[in-house]
Image (cartoon, rainbow, N blue to C red):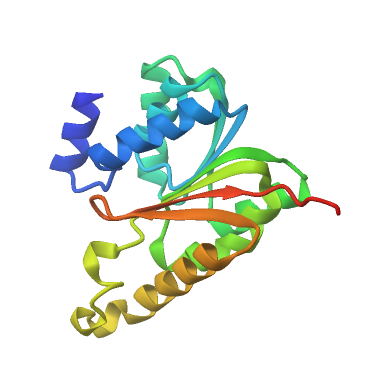
Length: 197
């Protein structure tokens, strides 16, 4: 895993940071999910961390073909490919397909394109079992969501979308959410079961 981390750093491939990775593994271990969904595979580093933390099966979506190929190789290398459905495609399209197949997940790791989180959220809610966990990474975007005066024109809509996502998930009554100001920030949200009175 250290070699994978080194490779990612040397090739400027964003992977989950150390303290965030530790929290992710702890949540996974605690939840012990049967089915995990990851949006943003990259080279498979976070997927491997989750698989090492529980006995679950992982669906993971990656849009970039070269990263998809690297992830494929890494899941094989760690003898995990029998526990992974690695999907090459755009997350929005693939999430729609999963919703149509009525597949339900116990744990979702959201680490794809930051400006798209808000668009994925309605589908993630449909895909998540009651008591399921959504772990959303990089929600502070290097402090840009807190200090919008530093945002370049190019990143403005991405930052705005992330702020909208943060507000939405933190205030959604179907979730119990907590924001952790660690590294680049993450939110852990637990979906409450709807109780009939």
